[in-house]
Length: 461
Image (cartoon, rainbow, N blue to C red):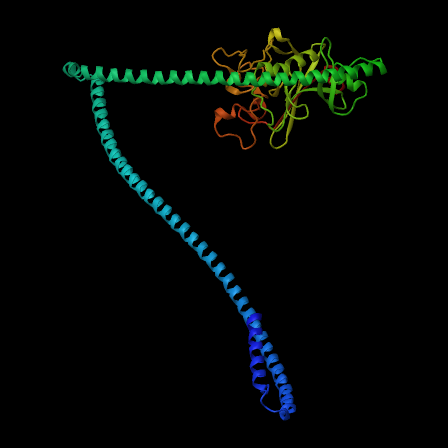
């Protein structure tokens, strides 16, 4: 815009100056007047030029403002175009969703038709089955009437006439019984297979547990040997053979200690220290955190946590108690927190006699009778090693856990732990932790503790 405006300004100045300069033919007399006119014309030119400059400036501002408005309109148009495209995409998506919904609706309608057809077929089949059932009932009624007639002896002719029907009925009954026997046999076979699989699984679990226990036991034995050697260097006393020896040496706090019975490796036990002496705890049940439905190897080696629920192990119990006369203390509580305890003088045989338990003194009272008092002793029994006195039944498999089962109904402190309320079914409740002569055969106990100590501790109490 600057070049056209300058040209316009030059044209205007030239036109004005052309009309204002005097011609040469005018005389010299008019020269002064012409000069005055010329000066006045330049002022007008300056005014005109100033006005034109202002006009140009105004035009420029107008043009710039117009450019800004055009730019804003362009931006708004772009935004509008983007919005329109997004709306188009959204519309397309809605159309696709509506098409998918229509397809689903059509599939649902087809499914509904199929369901209606199937339900119609089922109604028809149900009607047919009801008719067949009614016919079978009628046939059975007729057969029963014929059988009753035969049983009541309605003459020789009737008996001869219905002989074939009776044979048919007998044949049908025999076939049905045979089918039932086959099904029962198949069920038994499946049950035996499942039992074998469970035994294999438990055996593998026990092997893994035994490996872990052996590794941890080896580490503990190394630590025990180091501690024992340091203790033996510091004091002349040998390692204690049970918790009562520790009590006699001045230990009065209950907790974990390491002992070493005669001809045995050191191992860790939980000692229950009382004013009378120290008891070696061999079993504890309190919350159901440990599964006691274990196999023979687990009960022989022991399992669980000494700070919680555990079974010390038959071999360890035997190694502690074989050194003299020992007392077995059985303590249990019900869900009202009432506590009962019983003491037995006992002897536990070794592995060669299946760790049979022999009660040395038969004490008066009904409460004590739940633990077997056979003179020859009762061997320990598990589900994979049936040593109980039932020839036709595996008590450990029926009741769960391992125990000294003389028969299957007096006691089992290693059964399944039930939190109240107990199961309603009797066959499940009889698998629980129970002591028959205290709360009954089907009452699951809340806590149990079994511990042993030398017989001299009973004299102090």
